[in-house]
Length: 46
Image 1 (spheres, helix red, strand yellow):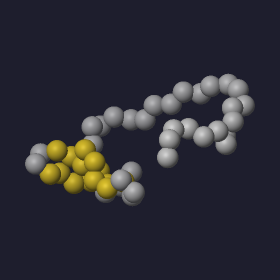
Image 2 (image 1 turned 30 degrees about the horizontal axis):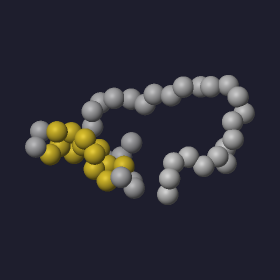
Image 3 (image 1 turned 30 degrees about the vertical axis):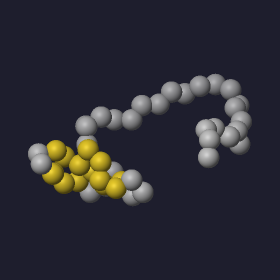
Image 4 (image 1 turned 180 degrees about the vertical axis):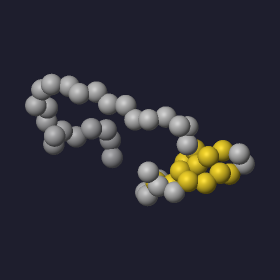
């Protein structure tokens, strides 16, 4: 986690590449799935 500060009563945190974002106090969430998958599969449009 990066630096934090408060602006207009809202806590913000700095993430390199994203800048300052509101800190909602939430954590991350992940799901472990089985299967090999294809790590080279294209996802989305560019």
